[in-house]
Every structure is written in structure tokens, then in C-alpha cells.
Amino acid sequence: MSPRLHDRRLRVLVFASAFNSLTQRITLELAALGHDTAVALALDTGAELRAAVRRHDPELIVCPMLTSVVPQDVWSTRTCLIVHPGPPGDRGPSSLDWALGAGLRQWGVTVLQAVGEMDAGDIWAAEPFDIPELPGGISKSDVYRNELSDAASRAVERAVRRFAAGDFRPRPAPPGVARPYYRQEARRIDWTGDSTATASRALRIADSSPGVLDSIGGRRYFLFGGQPEEGPLLPGRHRPGAFLATRGGAVCRATADGAVWITSARPRRLPGGPPTAKAPAADALAGQLRGVPELPASHVPLPSGTPGTSGSRLTWSTVRYEEQGPVGLLRFSFPGGAMSTGDCRRLLAGYRYALDRPTRVLLLGASRDVFSHGIHLGAIEAAADPARESWANINAMDDLVEAVLNTRDRITVAALGGNAAAGGLMLALAADEVWVRDGAVLNPHYRLMGLYGSEYWTSTLPRRVGPDAAERLTGEALPLIATQALRLGLIDRVLGCAPQRFTEEAAALGQELAGSADWPRRLAAKRRAREHADAQRPLAWYRSEELAHMYRNFYAPDEPYHELRRAFLHKTPPPTTPERLRRVRPTVAA
Image (cartoon, rainbow, N blue to C red):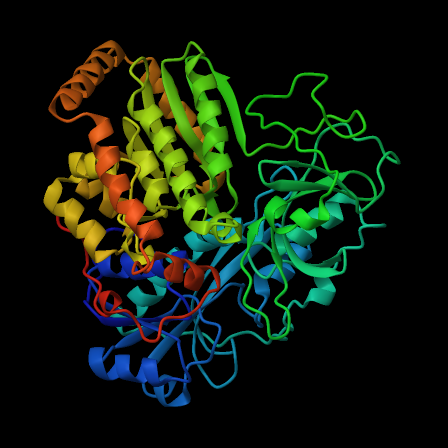
């Protein structure tokens, strides 16, 4: 959205089924535009919304992500704008699924007025967007967090501006047919006959919800992922449906003409059994993988002769390194941004490899979509001892962050093409500079998971924003959009580019930084600053202090972390809209 204030300040209530990344972005952008903004979550049949309406007395209600209906007594007395993830005339609950399933290259977002019939109200704004073609296809969650989110931001701003002006007349929605919910019957994969392209598309359409339901070894699982294996698998050498290998928590499964990688899985809940959570596929399917080889991780193309399956060479990896002259790009992409103990160690190995290369600037991330959300709660939940795995995971994250903080022979840049939170954002703050694509949502706090936090945040966060702002950010536990973070000094640059151009833009800026005549002075200043900071208080002190708190969070019986983790993974809604969301301030003062 544009940073300029709207002409008339409105009382706006954001009503949503979840405070997800799109809801956070729309809420913060409306507040940044000067509107008096509050949030209500759709937690019941309408009582929560009615209470918020009485409390906030909104002139306008905006619904960025809604899986339930707005009660008639509300939409008939207040203007309620629904953000529908489809172009004008599209109706139904699975719009993006159907678009991706049909292989469409363009889709859209419509902001329409709530009426009695679902998705049939007058149109206040509409915004088209292109669905990019990526190697192996693109996932639903990636499109949702990026191209769709950008389009929704523009459409909501236009609709709210039109409402504030008071002279706009919305146009009637064109005739349309509501498509049904995209059920598992449409997602089913026939592993004996479906091609890699078909299986990959089915998995990617179901990411990150609901997954593709499959039967394996007499148990039902929801499968996620879908990255095609690009190595030279020989047709006919592998039985379709067979598990070929694991790597980095993912499982490679044969199709009729190749193979795909399943990155995550969740056992279907048994009748009367406890709820289940999504975990790395190799963990969730462990009982089905006897005899399946585990391949070594790789951040560069694997050398010939690497052990594979039947002599095949499998190339997929979550960590990749490439060079563009004096700029190194250590690119990584973990499902949902969650980083397990193994993920952290693999990324650290890639980072050490990158440090052995003769570059002046090292970019971390530099990929579209999520940067990192910190430790892997699903892998922790799936572990035999969640407290022990939590401890291993946070120490692995700390090892990675420490390596970045101690890099003294080049300039490091964290390039965030998408959202970051908790320890994932603190990983970014360890770099010398932080560049963020406009539209990303940042959550610089741990409190909502019952954690004190580590990753040297008690050093890096106050250094960037000051101790008072650091205390406020972590205590209030509210998200930030990129422009807010820039004003605070939390980040150094906002890149106003399309998601698909982020890597190119970041790499170009890296080249500019590496070729700057100021580079030697900056590097010398960086070394002096690190030496001065270590003389005042060494990094080991921060780590020790933070981990003392985290140990208690993980092991003390009266700590809420384990309960909050399970509630998050099982998507247990809060009993009421949290107090911190009932009035969202326009900005965070520096």
C-alpha cells in the first residue's frame, strides 16, 4: 500500500478467521495509512464480531481471510468488504486451488461487499496478478504469500480509499458459478501411473493446507511438498510409488517417469486419537522407510559418484550456493520457514563453504517467499523427547548465528524475499545489512510461544533499534511491515520489486556494494565494531544468558512452551481475540 495517509481517517475493524500473514499485512497497512484499526477473530458464530463492533464502532469492516460468513445483522448495518482470492465473477471456497489446478497463468483478487449470497456482493476493487512459472511449478502458499498478497494489498487500499471518499458506487458482480470445495478426490495421486509433473502439481496445490491424503503401509497421511527431482533417474529402474531416498528431512518418491520430493507429512488423526501435527516427512514416515538410504546434504552440485539409489544421482537440496563475481549467494528455502536441527547444521555447513570462496559480499537468503521462522516446532513435536530436541535445535540456530556475527572478512547481507519471525528474523539481524522486499511481514518476538528467545537477540536487536524499542517489540509481540521496520532502523533497505525479481534485484545491489570504493573502509569499520563489542561484552555472555532462560522454558514443568507449541501446530484457536490486537497503532515510534 502507498505510505501516504488516506484523505479521511476511518475506524476500521479487520475481521478474519486467523491472524495470518495476509491479515497482519492488511491490518498494519491500514493503520499506517492513518486509520483507527482494530482486529476481531472469527472464533464463534458471531459473538466475537458483535462485541468488537460495539467496542470499536467501525465505519468499515474489512475481511482479508475469512472461512465463515459475516452475520446478517452486521453486514446489513455496516459496510463489510470481503477480500476474495479470485477475479470478478469467481465464487467458492477454493479459488486459488482451482486456478493452479487448471494451470492458469493469471488470476486476481476481488474486494466485494458482503451480502446474503457468498461472493456475490457489489465489487469495490479488483486487482489481477500473474502466476509465475517456476522450475517444477509453484506452490499455493508461495503464490498466496506473494503475488496474491501484493494484489490484495493494492485492491484493499483502493477500496478503502473509495469508501472514505464517499462518492464511489460499487459495480454489481458479474454472473458466476460457485465452484465447490477442492476435495481430496481431486487431489489424489496415482503413484503407479501419474507423471512427475502431475504428482508435483497435486502436492503443490495442497501446500500448506490441506495436503494430499495418501495411504502408506496401512496408515493414512497428508503429504506436502512436490519439488521434482531433476537428477538423471532412469525410467523403468524404479517402481512407481517406491521411496528412493531421504535428504534433509525430505523423502524422494518415484513417479511413473521420475520422482518428487515430499518435504512434510502429517498422519491422519485416528478416531478418538490425539491430534496430529505436520513434521518433516522423514520423521512422520519413519516407520515406512526401512532400508531407504539417507543421502548427504549438499549446497553445491553433487560430485559424480555420490551415493544415490541404484546408481542415480539426486540433486534436490534446501541449501544452494552460487557466485556472481565478487558476490556469493547462499540461497535456502525451508518448508514454511521452519529450520530443524539438521537444517541449521546444513545451512552452517553451506555458510562455511561460502566463507572459503573469494567473495567480497555474501547474501543470505536472496530467494522469494519466507526467509525463516526459526526453530522447527513440527520436528520438535515429532521427536521422542521434545524438550531435548528443542534444546538441540536452539543450539544449532545459535551456532549458525554466531558464525554470521563472527564473519570479519566480507560484508554479509540478509536478503529477505518474504516473511521472517522469531529466531529466523534474529538470524537476519546477525548480518551487517538486512534488505527486505516490500510486503514482507516481520515478527521480532518470541513471547507468543512462551519463549525468552536466543540467537543473540539481546545483543543484535537493541543494537539496531535501541533498548526501549527492543523491549517494546518483544513485549507487545506485534508484527511489522517492511516500511515500519525501516523507520525503526530494524532493517536497512526495502526493495520495492515483484517477488519474482527479488533475487535479481538483491544480487544487483550486492554487486554495487562489492564494487563500492567504500568497501575497504566499511570492512575495517565492521572489524573495529566487532572487536569493541566483544571487549565490552563477548558473544559468549549473551548466549549463556539467553540459553539459561531457554533451558527453563524447555524443561521447567510450570512453563507454557510445550502447551503453546501444540496449540500452534494443531491450530487451536484462542478463546477470544487477544487484547494486543484490539487496537493496532498506526506505527511503532522509534
